[in-house]
Image (cartoon, rainbow over all chains, first blue to last red; front, side):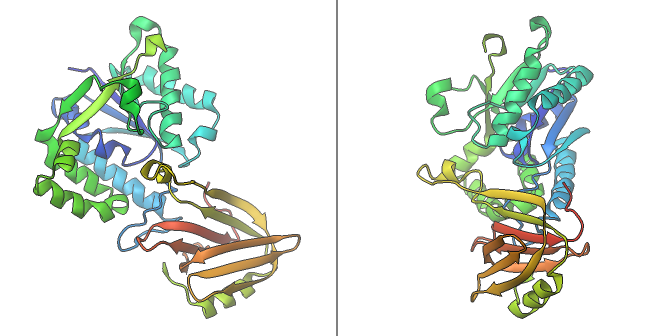
Length: 222
Length: 116
């Protein structure tokens, strides 16, 4: 069992598809989870179906969705960095690393969950993860938390190998579905289809809902 | 937002001519375009809170619409616009939504800066 889990992602809903079951497994066994979310996904293209948002109202809507997702996940410590969606790779990296270090010093996590730098498709994902790794590297090797990283770029397994951490989260699937649904401005288009495919026991969707996969990031060797 | 009514939009464009304005101009095909389709050439642009002043402007097309603004020393232009609104902050928001309802372009004008 972990002492404290720190989840660091750039966008509300990054925690929903690939990590929600794992987060629930921690919070339901009493492990506190801190979630650092860098932006409010201000630049999202999905505006709800029917349209419920515009470019200026989207951040307020996504904040409410994020807070509801955290409630469903049992996350009591949400920390927003107030950065803007799609700008993470252009920000002052040193400042970002320092802010992440401050959170690490504060909550002293035994485990950090983030993306795998370079293998997470969205530039914000890769830049966030790269900063997290730099912050972890600043810690004395014996004191470093474990880092579980999420990768999904095309062909990533050819390079990284199979993920070494595979969680069966099937017992949390209905709650995970609610977390995905909570981000309704972003997921309304795909949610009903996905839910139906899950109920029909479609293999791809079942696998995605029931299994969460991570690579332990080799901080000491990088 | 509501579907663009070119007559009302033209009135608004004419009304704001000569004012010092902040502009938000953005096009996007999404950060996952090249992930979902390896051959896709992904482009996008984003400019927020640049200051402009235009001499005159027009809305054209049959829908989706085009809006062009003649600046004192240049031009600003957007195409693919489908919806608009003037929000409670008096910000003029134009957007182009694709057939799936996803935002592909945003063109916005305001007398006060947009939130960073």
